[in-house]
Length: 128
Image (cartoon, rainbow, N blue to C red; front, side, top):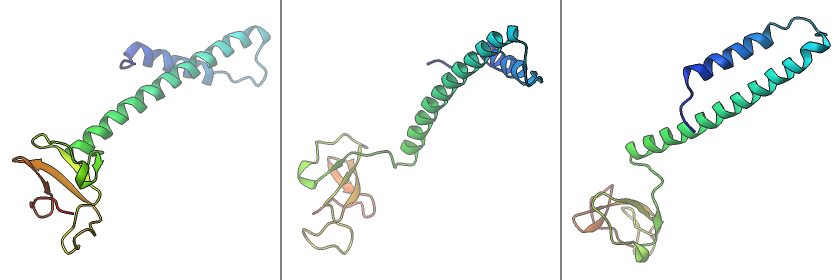
């Protein structure tokens, strides 16, 4: 879906204004089909705008997540870590935090640097 145009916003505003201008609780029968068409058009336009906004918001959230370094990184166990690409981010579900014993890792975020997966907090090679 593309970005809404000024004409689409104008049309939406005109429809809202026209519908808002109906002051009679019992409009004449001849006006009912026009009112129904305006309401249907308004409903369709609003749905399109909501879908567009949801799509754009998802893109913004993904970008913010990447900027913050908290993008939805894939999770691996130490044994299944892939060959990395410089700067790649992941999460090792059984990686050890400082103070955790061998085989007792509760998981750590990692990044790939200089041919190795490294733990963010210590810059050391991830261990299990």
